[in-house]
Amino acid sequence: MGRKLLIGGLGAALLLAGTLAGVSYGGGGGITEPEEIVLTHSICGNDARCGYFMWKPVKGSDSRFGQAIIGRLPSHDADGNLVGTSHALVTTGHGVGSIVTGIERLKDGPYTSRGSVTFTGFVQPDGCYFGDEVCTFSITGGTGAYVNARGHATVERVQRQIRTTLHLIP
Image (cartoon, rainbow, N blue to C red; front, side, top):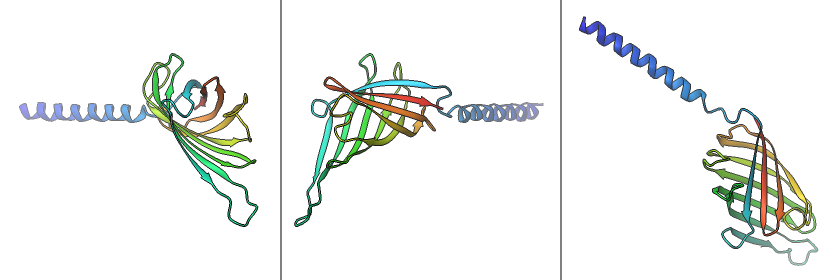
């Protein structure tokens, strides 16, 4: 009788463990409905770290120059809470514009969940980082709570900050 109870209890435990593992595995599919996240970042300098790498023209040629900017900027939500870090690479050719790739690494907060969102796109010369324009980038994916995210991101300069809005769709 004791052996039958032991085998029954072990079987029930295995069945319960399998059920819980299936539930936890199935719960990580990313966002399920459209979501908008507004983040603000400091301009390079204060609490934001940026590196500038100038490209020089080749001697004896009329080639133009450009630069690469690598940035690591704290990300704040609408209430000013620190909710992550923005990593950016801006590659600029003199007079032709910039290619921008950004990664928003987010943690759990009132408006955010743990994960990352990647976006990329092209900025016209004197675009959103320097003027009053709003630039739009394609969201190319994400991780964690934002796995398989799609949509677009808008970036604009607002006074002494940069505002990034992630328009996410599942």
